[in-house]
Length: 445
Image 1 (cartoon, rainbow, N blue to C red):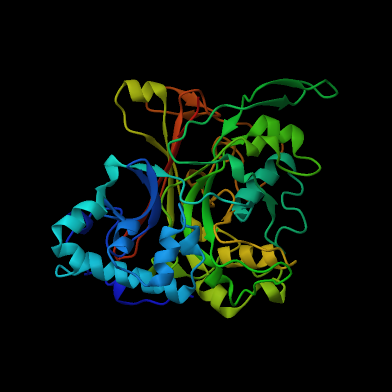
Image 2: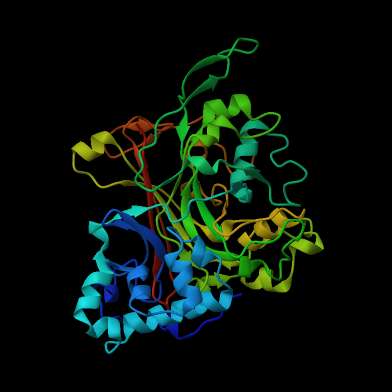
């Protein structure tokens, strides 16, 4: 577990004035990593205020030790940094914090270096932070799993195994795209219009989003060597926002007996910034409080540290911008506001279970939480749940759907052409600087 240090001081200020604004997403306490394109080349950077600092330029100027320099120079994404040890990652954070907060640092005082190393975020193209090799999506929200189960299995919403292990499936890494990429409505087999009828093939009619949080893997493990829960946090590099786009009608037809396939593999959006576990240290808290009648996790999935600090105090918001709203100059309309603290399983438990059979994870692999939903209607993390009239914990056989009403008078059960989904996330505490994860957006075309 990461510890608090001087880089979390809420009073720390940067000589980059935009980083000191009360509304900035990237104060000096944050320092998320990303990849941007400048001069036709991908470059590793760190965000602060409205600027991105090119780490390659700093390495060429003699900053950082040899291993950090290699991690930055020999990779076009963040996998080099993700291969570093916890101590090396902490050392990099400390060095960057000093460079960006000390007005007498070489970066602050050397105008030529500053001009070559700093770029305005608005003037660069943000890329995927990692060319992900493997991607696993979990199903870790009790509220989401219960709601969805209540729709299709009112008498038995949760299957017997759900509270004993983090459920997941192997996703499609090749269709991960960075925020801002247009999302093409998929074609596929659609369920028969009536029982006993034949399926049809055509465009998905029930396009949906899923609000999720992703975590990138650091270090990796050898094939056959599980990662214990006690060590799992060292293998987490940082978190990002994820939208696991879903074709609900295709999913309903194909998911039995093996689970998600083409209804999920056509696109998954990720935000361009990765907020490190070091930056999240002030916002750690207890894992989800389980009911007294819930089963006790097996020994490999529980310990006191995870119970006390395995959670992350992270707020998550989903907004929708339709074509009509865009034409009328309206702001995106908030659909939901939820908390990552509502997840039944922690990221560390997901990682530990993933490797419990000896599965080898590699630096830059991505695991995602599954839809983040809460106990109230306005904290549900997808349209499938938001438009469902059922009440959490009270299965309603034959319950109906109610369309969402938007400021333009439009209604939505599922996404329409031109709809743009925007996901934002932030960690806040009254005694700490608020840090953001940026945004994850995608427009359906």
